[in-house]
Image 1 (cartoon, rainbow, N blue to C red):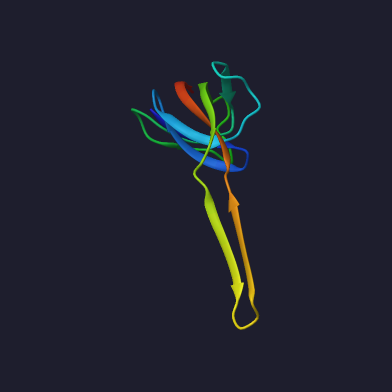
Image 2: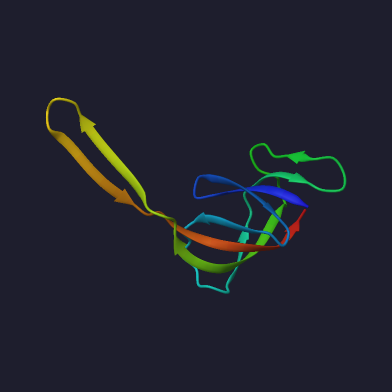
Length: 103
């Protein structure tokens, strides 16, 4: 069974026993979290689309790790003015393991 959930303003496709990376959550490693903002479900029968969410749908996941993505370098410049700025950014994320998708 597959689903699309919304967390922290980001839509993330998930499936049972699959890992995915979502924006950082304030929860401990090993904790079980529930996502009730399910936008889409597909399984054995026809797919179901929420308006905007599917009522009664729930995704249970376990938090595996907290980490940061690789560095992204941002370079800005304006020609002929000696204007150059270099910045780096690393986004925090939480890796989850989806245990169950309930309808």
